[in-house]
Length: 413
Ligand code: SF4
Image (cartoon, rainbow, N blue to C red; front, side):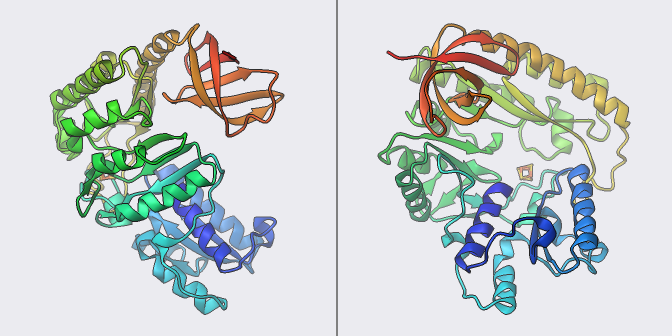
């Protein structure tokens, strides 16, 4: 989401005829789009702002993202930062830019973003969150849920496709609670899928509580929607889930996974799909027995990927004042333990790819080798004599599999 916001901010600045600086040491204006989900990211932002202020005192510093609304951050950085604006108050930034340079007004949602590349685009369809998971800063940093009108989302996607995009990722903090007039998320997905063109559709991040049967049917059947479902569980233990205010149980989550597996089996028989998740280890009070519940979910689901986070208390959140009583070393051990389970399931899942041919979207080149991703988000190293493949779909026959990546050769029918 922050990448997409940065692309929009860059698009706005470019539309105001501001030019990118050659490097940060000579820039007149530097915008920090911060993440406050983990303490480490927050510390890094402090360090970079301090260095910039010391080394380039002429630069005006603006801070947005998760940290912008925090009173303690504003107090600590008041001498260094010229403007704090949460992304939901983009007009504050716009007015500030207009006052500080001779530019004109615009509308954030109508901005043309400066996409990082032409073949893969992130399109925000909603922002904010109403869920208030007890550990999460997003509802405070971004405010309540606001969905973009479907017509506007579709118009932006049509433009991106006309411009050569091959992969569209629909973004939202809670993407499947999207609601705009008579559109829900399933209807929006169908409308995007119906747009002409040769492109893939991805989305993130859905919440288990909003994963309806109708949505599962849609996700597992639409042709352009990729066979990669990311469904965060956070913990496999019901008491921890309740403390996290996640609003689902382990049983409900596992039922959803079964429905997704059945949906793919029925709607795209024989197609390989991938499942991924987010898990927090070391939530306050998490016992070893509760961690085992999470481990058992992982063994049942057989994820392809899990993004682990070691619990770190965030100001403003409901659990900020709870005792962070799982020591750091134990959090590291728990993450390592779960990561070993993931490594095993990912390795076994990847063996299914061996000898088969998959469409790969090529995204980079290094030392005369190309790299890309399958629809299931598997990283593939590609051997080929062909040239200029970046941003292209190519058929690749998989010749080697490992835990985190695949290797293959371009395949000509
Ligand atoms: S649903 Fe996601 S964004 Fe919303 S509060 Fe929970 S973790 Fe944060």
